[in-house]
Amino acid sequence: MITIRSFARLKEVFGEEKQCSVSEQSTVADALMTLIHETQVPASTIFNDMGNVHAHLIVMLNKKRLTQAAIMEQVLSDGDEIILYPPVSGG
Image 1 (spheres, helix red, strand yellow):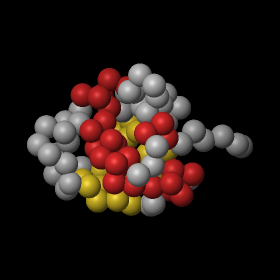
Image 2 (cartoon, helix red, strand yellow):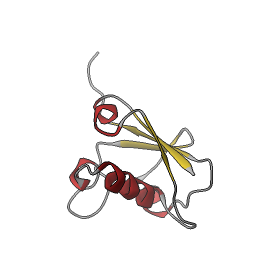
Image 3 (cartoon, helix red, strand yellow):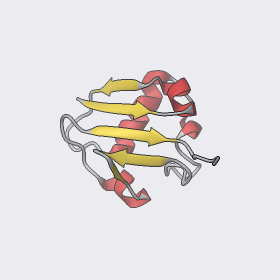
Image 4 (tube, rainbow, N blue to C red):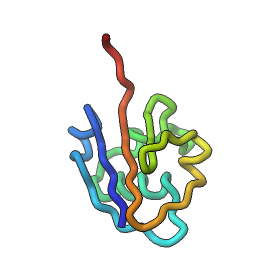
């Protein structure tokens, strides 16, 4: 079981916190796709046409920011926490 936390406008879309059950060897990208399926939100909310997470989204795993490659390759462990931040602006 992992936790996915969303902030700002993504919190309005997915809710503040979701518990997801993922299979062994699931990656961060797999967990995000599970989130999409469970919430029935369009995949384009997180993923671009090439199947990658939008470059403007910040994805963190256990409080460490992930690169695009790490999102696709990082295998999850029980208890992991994924955090989603939309672009931040203002001053």
